[in-house]
Length: 548
Ligand SMILES: Cc1ncc(C[n+]2csc(CCOP(=O)(O)OP(=O)(O)O)c2C)c(N)n1
Image (cartoon, rainbow, N blue to C red; front, side, top):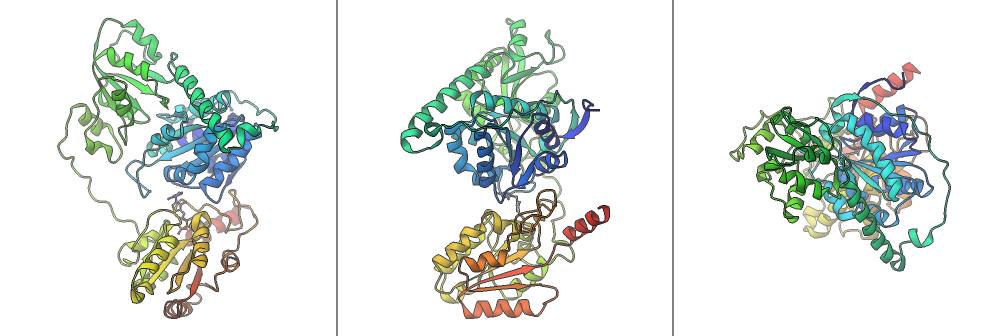
């Protein structure tokens, strides 16, 4: 049944909402914890596609929204860095169709290289940001975000975190709407961001944000009040109404929280009133002010950076925050109890888990054994192969962000004395190469270090790290159907790399060490494409063929 209540993860709920709200195109780049949003949208027959990277994803979606159609972008937090350039200026141009950018943060870094707090992006770019606490809210707020984006012709950010993305809870869907017909209305002054157009556009953006800031203070819009059970007000009533019913009695404890911290706070302090901030930018600061005035003690409970607590204090609202130690990692009920108790003594450490490892039989293993044995200085990148940094290989020396391996390797080659420079190798996966390695390769050809350079592209024919997604180099699209294929070695040759060698590390076991040794000794510019399909990808393909 269409309207059946379903048990969905936050990511699945976003995908269902996009489907029910007539999203014309969902586009993104995989990244934990966001990946399943587009995969689910695609499985629901929603038009979904992987872009080579997040910047391109946002640009494509922006074009869709310029054409007056609804668009959804999905990314993990660090992907928003990649998409930051179009993001900031898209805030100026706006887009009539309704553009929602779902960004999934990873507090605690279950699978990321940093734990940046994307709420800062909403403030910096000047965009509204909504934050659901569970799957039902993820569904409702995705739809709300699309409506708000249309209403103000302004991209809207929807921020999830690992818990919200991956936890399952019951979702009741709402009526399906059909998308309006796309069409183009020319608006040169509004969309061509030369300085003369951008100056008024910035002012327009700030005016729109003032309107959003006024809207967010209207009852029920930016907040929701979860009252303690003994309070003489209805649980779940909106903030203003509930507070109006108890004007004279100051209740002992009030908590201001966002995202999943709301659920932790309710469990940790069932006696407290909890004000859920649903829109974190613009913040419903006057509603928070009234809430804080309605309680004896008001504590802000938020995961990550002290974003809301700083905003409250800047607005002269007396709130308590959390000790610095709780900025790191995820919150949970126990940690929220500690925050509320003002407990700042060291926390007990969870027992160390088993370190992750490359799979038995993974073709990456052969390369890292070799790099270790040759005592290479390895400028690494992000993917399964980052595990080459751990024992028994210990064969990766740097890993910063996707695509950095080539630039960092070049820098090392430029600076190190010749004997050390000749040991430097950049190692990058196939998906990562397409994502952001290409320009590094152009740099290598344009400004070659005196000792030359060697790039090893670990081509396992999939994006293994995030769960076997396709990319332009695999020759298949998001649904694993055939698509035009980017031939990596041809691209390398065409940008001017003189020595490009493709090697199967298993079938050509001897050739790989011989070629790498030759490349390191001879100097010059080399790309070794080490191509062998990931074993898990092979199994996926066999299963797909079996069920076809
Ligand atoms: C900007 C950014 N987007 C997405 C991710 C998530 N992510 C990490 S590595 C990776 C790609 C891994 O694929 P590949 O380079 O082919 O290596 P493999 O895991 O297959 O060995 C992705 C999507 C990220 N860390 N940063």
